[in-house]
Length: 112
Image (cartoon, rainbow, N blue to C red; front, side, top):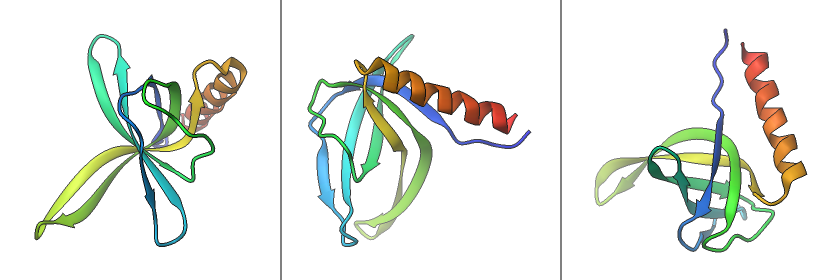
C-alpha cells in the first residue's frame, strides 16, 4: 500500500479570508474553516491563486493536502500545520462537489 496525503473538509469560512500577494505574483487566501461533527474544529486552509472569492459564512468543500511549514518569528523557529487546498468548492454546487469527491476516492483506491 502506498501513502497518500488527502484531506476532504466540509465546513464554513469562519472569518474573512486574509489575502496575501506573494513576491512571485501568486495570490494566497488564508482561510479559517470551521467543521462540525462529533466535535467542532477550526482548520487553517491555504488556497493559492483562488478561482472564487469567499466571504465569511460561506459553506464550502475543501480538497487538498496537509502541510507543515516552518518559519522564523521573533528570532525563533515556529511551525504551522495547515491544509493546502487544491480545490475549494461552494457546497451548493452539487455536481462539482460530487466530481471532486469521486476524484478523491479514485486517488485513495489507487493508493491501496
